[in-house]
Length: 369
Ligand SMILES: NC(=O)c1ccc[n+]([C@@H]2O[C@H](COP(=O)([O-])OP(=O)(O)OC[C@H]3O[C@@H](n4cnc5c(N)ncnc54)[C@H](O)[C@@H]3O)[C@@H](O)[C@H]2O)c1
Ligand SMILES: N[C@@H](CCC(=O)N[C@@H](CSCO)C(=O)NCC(=O)O)C(=O)O
Ligand SMILES: [Zn+2]
Ligand SMILES: [Zn+2]
Image (cartoon, rainbow, N blue to C red; front, side):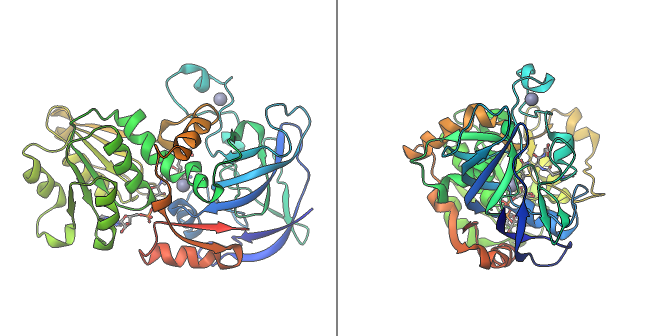
């Protein structure tokens, strides 16, 4: 079938809106009509060419909501008409990782997903007879996409797709990082570096966890108002200080914060986030994605004196098990999604979403089909 799609033909170039061909779902696969998709910084990261797993031409996008159109052989858990959120972290329930009870990092489809193909090693997308690759197992920048059954969370059809698509990545990642990775406790102090969709979701999660002081840090002060609305108690612009930001945070708190979160993808800031953690027990969670060749560093003494460095993917959330409940929480107002959606636009204007992100003017742009 034909599908309107925004295709990344080349790194560093705008997406092109074209009509691609989408082949039918094979065994264990599902054809989904995407109705809405958020644009996450990770899409921009891969488009920039910095992602070692980046492959072109590809249909990017991994923060979507849609409706099942057709299922392939053997698919039993979803049927046409079901409302779904595609998952870049699958949940097969069978693999070593799923069964461990220790992680959400299912490996069922991860190897082929990283190569831009479906589990059988081929792609369902083509343009002018040439292959177009999948992205993060989702490819939500196409109106019709094919995903593995294990990569779909079935959600309440009454939910607002313009908002719950954000549970496909940004908001879930931030909330999960607080709850599952850092395990923030009532009264704990928190520092959040980077106030985009991820950082603001961390702040929302910290507030929900009953954190005491929540310090929001960004070089773009226009982000502070929303950060305060979500629960930030202090807002800090590193540019206002002539000393390292970790020193500023340590001086503000005495010995540093109980938990810090890096939500930017900057290895220098990752170091600062670790070093502003409390002597003896502070921990720092890396959420931001850094480019090929980038490495983190700090003095080992920082760890010897009790700080911990952690990381998280999709906030440690098991999508098929947990997203349906998170959608209910959003519908009941227990999770706030509306404030994240600063812009909406049709697919034809998707490049504007990237421009707004790079200009620091948006939190989330949601594209509709
Ligand atoms: N680990 C995961 O599962 C996961 C999930 C989603 C996104 N991410 C990553 O999280 C990061 C954030 O994503 P986003 O969509 O919120 O991005 P975003 O671009 O919306 O937000 C980033 C924010 O960081 C701020 N910033 C940039 N440089 C800074 C600096 N030196 N000091 C302080 N603030 C600075 C920007 O002003 C912006 O407000 C990206 O690296 C993305 O790839 C990771
Ligand atoms: N492909 C990159 C890594 C990209 C990455 O770290 N992705 C995050 C999700 S970002 C969502 O916006 C993640 O979950 N990683 C775990 C996984 O991909 O299995 C690289 O190769 O460096
Ligand atoms: Zn994302
Ligand atoms: Zn699994």
